[in-house]
Structure formats: structure tokens, C-alpha cells
Length: 363
Image (cartoon, rainbow, N blue to C red):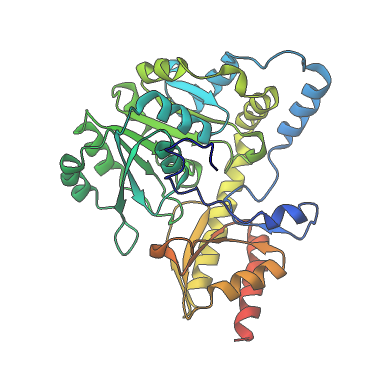
């Protein structure tokens, strides 16, 4: 586009998933397993709360710009002080604010590869200088090596997803803590979008350290992806900085109410997470028995897998014809033979197992 700015002309777009599933959104047989959303509806409390809000809340007002009930609920859930919490219109929106607050012209940003790519795109669009740091052949991050290389790369910001997306692999919390503590001049963004599925967090450091921002979302375990709401946990000084440019009107009334209701019924979330982790174990065991599939053991609500013998594209098409949508990672050389599949309930994944067996029988 001839009117786009000079920076935007140079960057690579963030690769989104195929939109095909939305065309069948009203079909009860569809399994949308490509974006790691919840595969079940959120808590009934969310529906009751939204219904009440439709009738009784003031639509003609801007949403609550200082929702103390939501801040308190998040504070209790995360086990940190209220001044260490802020909510945003999705964790993606939080990432945009982080970039705008902390990146100046040509600052270096280190991201690992492969990982969630939106932060890279946003940082580059704001004239950040991206340095990619590759995972090893088992998709693990060598934090000791990274510690040594930080002095050479000297990034202002390090972006890590834990558990990592799309691989599902985890970064060791103890090693990560040492790295953050020993790198006071580097700002670490730790994206914990899948925290509920592995229960491991680095957020406890934010009370004392001002070089860490933990990013979280309601789009995965809580089942609120369409509401677009997330939050961050950070030192009070970082929260104050983000609030300088944060537009408090951008988190809708319904998103705030839905988040409060979901937090108020965490038993619903906990039951779903337990089901997904059980289902993931069954599905992973099934995949390991297939010589043409190499699954990666992971801690999120998804499995990353290599499809051998040039069968990946055929498998993806076969699944789509049967109304199951997965994420193709063929756009990256490092993962050209890989795909990622969101894990649903045991019953949902039994359908996928049946389809994979059916596909294999035709080979």
C-alpha cells in the first residue's frame, strides 16, 4: 500500500489461522481446534451476568474505567497486590501498550523462535529491532546459554511465552527467575496465556522486581475469547507507566462483567482444565503409536506434532472435510512439517482419534 508508513512496508505480517471454521460456526459438529480457544462454553454464571447486564446496565455510558471489583478479584486470584494488576482489551492489546511504552527507535527486542508471533509484528511496527533466538532441536530453550548471549545481543526487551506456543514446551521457572534477577537492565515479558493448564508462574517476582511483566488472558481456560479481555501482573511502577497511555474505555462493559463472573466460578474453569489435561494425555499416547506422527510433549491446551512422509497437507484437508480445523505451521521453515491441534474434552478428542485412524486406513 503506497500510503503505509516506511516501517510497515518492511515487516512480515503476523500469520493468522484459516477463517474456514467461522463459515460453519452454527454447525454443532464443528471442532475449531486451531486457535487454542476453550472448546466448551464458559461458566453459566457468565451467561446469567451478561443477560442481567443487557437488561439493567447503562449501555449509553462508557464502561467502568476503574473497575475496583475486577482489580480486587484479579488480585485475589493472582496473589499479588491490587497496584500490581491492570486489565486490558486482550493480552494482545497489552502487548501493544508495552511496545508503545517501552520501545524507542531501534531498541533491540529478543524473541525466541518458534513462538507466538504477534508481539514480534507489533514491536517491528513500532521500529523495534528484532533478534530471533532459536529453540533447540527438541524445542527447548537453553536458559544458561541465553544468559551468556544476552550480553552480546544486549536487548532492551526479552519476550518469552511459558508454556511456549506453538510447541507447548516449558521454560524452567527456577532458571528463569535467576535470569531475570541477574538481568536488571533487561525488561522481560513473560506471556502466561496457558498458565491455568500447567499452574506455573513467575508472577511472584513482580512485587520486588521492576523488570518483569507477566501477560495473561481470559481467552483460553476461561472460555471468553470473543470478549477480548486480558491483564498484566507487574511492579507498581510498570503499571503506572502503562496507565499513562492506556485507554481505560476500551475494555467493554460486557468483557468486564464476563471476567468477574468467570473468576467467581473458578470451579468451572478448574473442571475444564482437569478434563483437558486428561484428554491431552490420552491423545498424546495415541499419537505416539503412529510411526508417521511425532508429537511434542507440552504443557498447554494443545499438542504440536510433526507429520512425516509429506502427509501433513493431506491430513489437514481430510480433517477440514470432516469439520475439524487445526493450525498449519508450514509457513516457517523450522516447522514446515508441523501442525498444532487444540485439545478439547475426551469426547471431542475421541472424534479426532477416529478421524486420524480413518485417514491412516486409506494410506
